[in-house]
Length: 128
Image 1 (cartoon, one colour):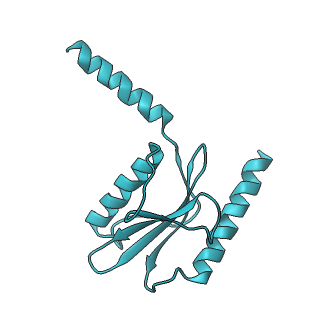
Image 2 (spheres, rainbow, N blue to C red):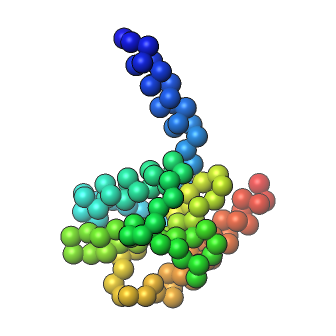
């Protein structure tokens, strides 16, 4: 093997150790109900967030109604639209909810649940 092979393997291991972990507070992304293509798209977008990539429209938009650093991933499926509500913390990507979007506005119950989950997460992590 060439030296380049060893160097690239070392770089991959180094990058993997720097990525932010995903912390799931609620929801999951699996097939079904997601199509395989939508599940893969969600995986790619989450992986980019872990690597520190700042996503913008049309993939992600801020959700200041939930809190600071909160956003939603926008994933268009075959006949459904999915949302992944997340918060970018300095040390992790926190997933607050995954839901199917059926109306133009995010339901108030989703906003309230995400706010509650993130507040509880902050309380628990501060205690540690």
